[in-house]
Length: 353
Image (cartoon, rainbow, N blue to C red; front, side, top):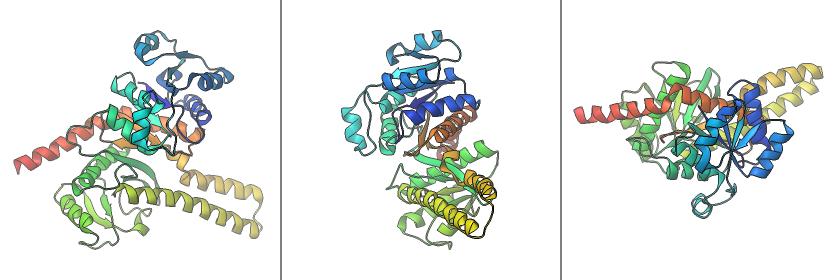
């Protein structure tokens, strides 16, 4: 198993990415030799040297031979001279920057040198790089970004949170199928509850997209519970929530900001009530661990041939470390193969009917 990390992606790259790689090894998520850092050699090698970490520079054309000869416990570093900025147009940037860390990382998966690619860089460019380099899974119309986060009754998965802002009903149906497959693999629940994010809980609510998607879901064989309103998203109404990328991204970013705001309010009220500072610190740390985006690490881009994990642009070392764990778990669970079987089974069922 090998996981490629975009060392130049994110607001705090390459420092946060390299430190996240080191932390992932320290936590036992992976070994050093299972991580491949992709990006500009000078800053990456400087950070690894400062951490007294062993590494080997392995250009992509010579990767297989150099990787095989590298000692156990040695990081692999693959050069990429260009960086896609967070504010750049994904299509234009990838067209001009053929040697960007995003494209080189995706090619490592395409060439089967790595099993997964992980980036905290420009989300649109990351999705585009994956779609350019990796084929869509057989039968999948559009990939979707799925993130699993903590709710009131435990974890739930929401898809899509940013890959496709103008979906068709068939895309949303497939998001439900892929999200349900991921949830089963992650948590061993045989029949996860699947819901459609909508403006009302009643059947027939919503715009034309929502109404047509409901019909698809009811005929899908999924454990579809119907529409889920915004206030019920975090209350455990469903295990898998399906929505278009625009709405999903707003929900995700809103929840992060709201969690931070509420934590500040609680802290202010506890201080005003005269609670001892050490008790406040201990309690808030436990609460924040359940709400902090860095604890879920990254979101999986489902529907492409290979594991692609997309991280928050503000990811710190802890978030990168947990994104490595998410990538590792996705590789081990063989979720990609399971999605192919589920989509193929759905298509066969339509033919048989």
